[in-house]
Amino acid sequence: MSRDIDVLVLGGAGVDTIVHVPELPLPYADSYMIRPGIETRAGQTGDFVALGLHTLGLRTHHLDMLGDDPEGDLVRALHRDRGIALTEVPQPAGTKRAVNLVGPDGRRLSLYDDSRAHEDDRLPERTVRDLAGASRHAHVSITHPCAFALQTLRDTGVTLSTDLHNWDGENPYHEPFAYAADIVFVSTTALADPERTMRRIVERGRAEVVVATAGAEGAYLLADGEVTHVPAVPPRTPVVDSNGAGDSFAAGFLFGRLAGEPVHRCALYGAVAGAYACTVPATRADAIGRDELLTRVDELEQTPAGR
Image (cartoon, rainbow, N blue to C red; front, side, top):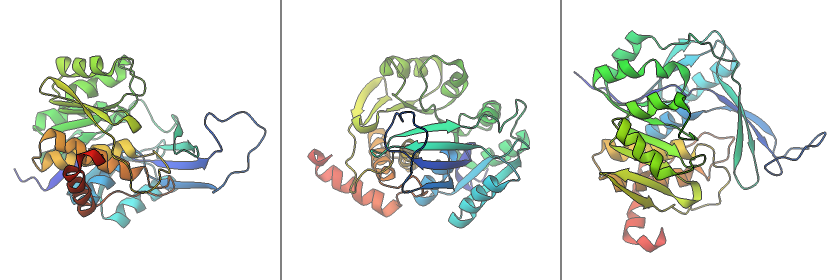
């Protein structure tokens, strides 16, 4: 079968409203004067992964549910303007949206609008099967409709990855994603024992690789039964926002994986891409390009102490 798509990204399309706040947590006050302002732009986890992969030169296709609303128009425009293929399924409840409070140090607090979804939301099985059958790999967001697409994806034989984000290691909602994927990304933010959770994912599922990202502390990589530390890469310009860093790490890692690179080099690709994302203001959707990524990785490998 022809594989005309390098990576199929499922779910995670939406719109964020960025609000810059003087500090996090934000103390109660009757009002705040906000600068540089409040701005709404397309870009949630699936959008950022798709953008990162596409910017690295991979043939990327994004599938998700979108509403017939201004937010959906923003998502459609992002994909059209960047040249990212998009297959949309009608979402009567409207396009997903969130408000991100961003502090001066780049940390964020996200408030997700849970009303723009229905319990019976699904991605059409035939659409999922046809797109997966044309893909080398599929990256699955942990949104509700994607949970019902996991078996169809597995039936096509395509390899899978997923990002569990700030999973606490206990919430059962995340388990179908964790145990169905070949590559699992997760943040250490809410994990009491990251290594224990990583090993449980491998033991109970089919993951060959588990990556636990830890922000400024770097990441932890479980492969071939061994957990190793992946140092953080210092950004070349000041950190302004952490939004999308995990998505960029996943895109960089998958770029290396599909190129057949050793797993530790894939993790370095991810670290470089994630560091770049932290230098991009929250009001923009941008990602590192292939040439810049490879140049930076080459520099780091020549001077390991510089990491």
